[in-house]
Image 1 (cartoon, rainbow, N blue to C red):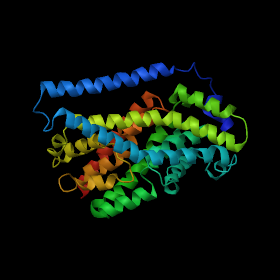
Image 2: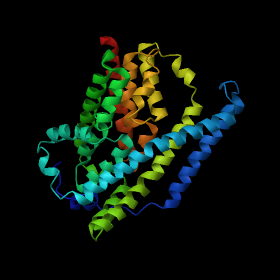
Image 3: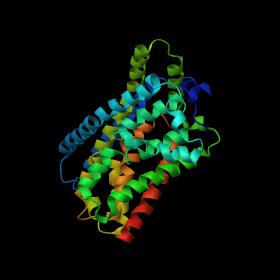
Image 4: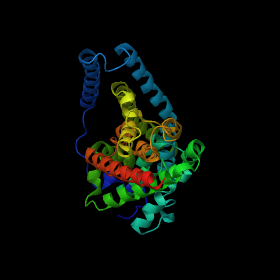
Length: 349
């Protein structure tokens, strides 16, 4: 798919979206999910009182604290991503970005996967920025390539990972090469989809329609787009943060630490941990450093590759734009790739 030249060719202009989903149904889903989590906490506490070392009230308080910490840590980057998205959509002239992109699809994806080098935001901020690229007319596969690579091939992430590990055990190099390769692999896979619009949610297509039809000067369009983007990503960010906090108090960390020395199980355990803790990619290397003495280098690399792409918070944010089938496919590809990469690192070091 070729890169378009303006937001007029955004996905919503190529296919009419269906009737909008009601806000009430989304609220009921969120409430239902909360009831399930609370019920699970009480059931575990009643049926297996010795499973956790701390009582339920303490664990609930810890879960809320963890959820708030994830939310507070992510919020500045989300806002920065929204601002960058608006700059791309409203203030950058049509064709200013596109004319610098190679025409060949594989070369364009290779360049886009390095775009994160110039955007010092974590995965949370990259989602609204990627939405801006889609609204501008970039292809779905191109945008996915950027979205997967950017939180890893990122100047702040490179500096923080080097500060934590240096060049020991090849962790920094393996993370950068792994993030770049898996991004281009995912981009190539989804570039072969016959109807890219079906990879996007109906709600996002409706948002594209609103943005395309927005009239007025740049100031008015900036304000309108800021409101639209925040309304889209903030509920997902809050739900993802709450899920991350809840899962962390439901899964004993001691169970993960017990298998840290096994070459294969340690990789699986650290990938599960990456999904659960939902750390910002700018600081996750320092968290992983605390496991370096008990877990294999390959498992650390798998943690650092999986977390910025498919943790709970990121999945909730991505769901605002991409369908569940896309997220499931990405998860399978990333998990298999990270496991293979971690195994190679364990064999080499």
